[in-house]
Image (cartoon, rainbow, N blue to C red; front, side, top):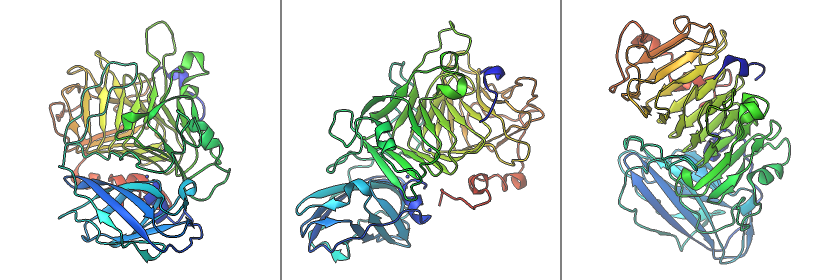
Length: 474
């Protein structure tokens, strides 16, 4: 990254579950059903699970539905959902249709699902109701044998990325067993492109709009405008590698770094889940400006869950107006590939420096008036080579970055993990570490450490709260 190209102005939590808890979704009028059956299947792993739910209408046709059930264990919780708006109060859960799957004809089915967490045990709900009518045909199926998380798959047109640590808890989404996806490149959905589905959302919408995307590669530039909040892009594959949105613009040929992105997410309370955003422009040394952004995020209160962000230089731009919670995701790049003046919490993520010569991971430009910039929390940092990668450098003089309770691999330059940038000294920036582990973790005069008392004020919740008390973590 060169400072000359980064001047000027200046994403389900806010997923379906968070939207519902925040009261932003409205349920359509529902008609009564005279019978129903539900198939509920889970794939469990320690502390978490994915639930696939198929609702079959055995009664008269309905247009607008709400499914209700009760978790047997108080430790069970819906974390993120798709193809429905989920709301949980104690052990009671409701799932309400989204626009595209409101109607269920007699004997027809719709499929929804969610990722959840549990403690103690993960028993199945004993019964379900559809529009208040008990589903007497309800069935549950056994859980498959728990398995470790699949590693993020290789980026398209690139050499494979290494597998992240198997300690990561995944959030894979099941493939749909019924219903029609919003977007499908093969013509089996409502739209063939992601942008066409976004364009169909009315401006100024005030409720959650879930755009489901069938597995495939979508080579397009995608923009969620500022006047279209509450949009969720939800991949329907078994992993985020199954749905790939990809472009290949770069700064030198497309009006600068900010304009080079594959996806521009500007509407507040946007969400991305179970998909990949990639910029597959390859740095080859023949151009002066080689920045090529995958995701340009302006949206406030954005949530990214089980997402892959793939690029080379400047992969993920978090602009000043943005607060974002990035959960159980994978980010790779070469130079300054997490950068900007916004506020971000990267929780349980895998971050990979792919360049053999290494480079800084972050380039924060936090305003002096902002307490919080970037928090890398309980994540894993790896790289192509040892002792070559820096934790970051200050794009702005008041940059704020904290690596907290994370595993730092041998790729980190242990003696000097922070460096200067554009006349800004890393020593004057707000760079800290706290209780990190791994071969790349160390304590020396070039590695400022937070005290326990300081760290109590730098939690994920405090980073994201802002003036409105936003808490997508639960």
